[in-house]
Length: 188
Image 1 (cartoon, rainbow, N blue to C red):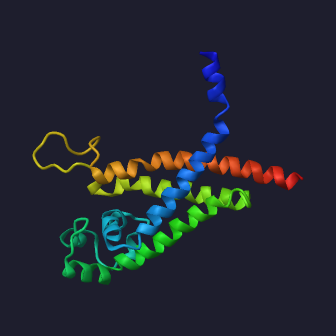
Image 2 (tube, rainbow, N blue to C red):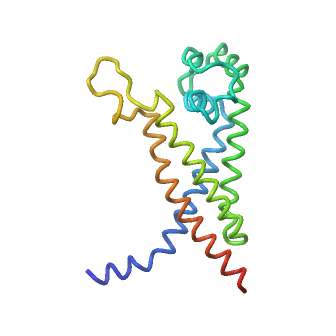
């Protein structure tokens, strides 16, 4: 059993590198998807209910509920409403920011200090995303007659958000490693 633990102990750096690659892939992929209507529509409840972001939208919080499209659904009237709401423009900007954070983290081999900043930004982004559990009613199973609703019953949206707890930890680990490497290089 000790041999197994000795082997596992040698995998720490590999684990950190895989964590960094995972962050990069997720950030660039999810950020890139923000350029598509279905993804922009999907974030509307989070943004509209967030005290940190709701000012980006033109219409008040409850209005979006009657203009939501299901993934893959095409309703021109809803698309027009989202254009007026600034849904798509905001999503494009957010997507560019998220892709940019992924790229900063990816610079670890050549610029660990910049990578540390990227990981710090991913940590902060995860903190904001996790705040949606408090601000977004759609994060919880609604009361539609079943006794299993509200806290602790996460809806699909809530399950999507809670995973950012992992991203937050991953960003902290990669930030720490990148900052350590930056300081080592600075001493040379």
